[in-house]
Image (cartoon, rainbow, N blue to C red; front, side):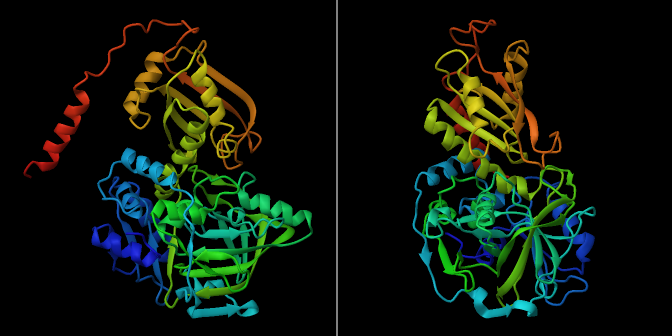
Length: 476
């Protein structure tokens, strides 16, 4: 079934035994973030966690780690919890090909139950805020979907962006937002500022899992996240009209914040413990003014712990990075078999491909670095043969150890673009990039001695199925 809101997803997690209720009284700091951090240390089946007894807060309800395991990720796609990683990505690809699915506009969203305007807004009263890491410069919204439109083409539905960007709560109705230059909201803001305008935005908190996945997925500039969400959930995605901006927002959100990014205004924001497993320093970032807040009765606040991988963000962004890279490469190079870009939001990608001719794999690796996502993220690519599963790391390590000759299989590109958050970049936003060709040379490349490879026996695949069935059906 498709989930229209966060609450129906939480109910499904509970039905599968993947939602853990923390009933004891906890401190907002450090307990909530520490518990979410701990979910990344107890295995791939970690549950979502729910807090309703938080010291110092009245009637606060906070949930963490909702997509933070492969079981939960599978449930978010309405798949059985035991669906393997590769099966989940293959299903993601299959549904991707159904794009676009037109959304369904609905009336009477639950987030319209309460409204606060202008100077009466106090985010500290509405949201149960807490720091995620002890070195954070303040309270952050880091799992909200931000909606913005192209100021030069506001009626183009596909150019309306839904993205996830970190936001520091800096006042009762003031936020700091980081628009990474490679992301669509930065394009919208640049166009608005060139016209001397503010950029209207709608910030949606407490969302169903599919639109959260879409907010983390690098689509083309003119591809609609709502139409892709419909494809991914295999039914039209429900949207509603935000009352102040008129933007299309998720019908099932818990909270809607509407306002503007103030044009040509910057203030210090940060530091923040990022998905790279390092703190980003304080930087001049945009300033958001909130002019209207709409929220459900007793809203559920959802946040995302980030830190040393793996944490929820790695499950959230992993498949959502693999699939668009695969689709973009496959469209130009049909030989590409699979893409594993689950590591640190695709700063490292592993790509398996057939080869047309010598040097072909390196060309595919270079192209991965110039895709819309790759320009800012893909820093290293490991290319492997079509019979090496990029999701099977022992196979990848075998390819690296037996196929790579550093004398000719390393392609280093100096002074390439990368997101500023990459702690290895110097100066911030500039890095050398690297392609490691761990494929078997083909003509006219005749290096090495690879003429007698050992292959899996023809019957192996059938025995894999048979053994898995026997293991699944054996009596415990």
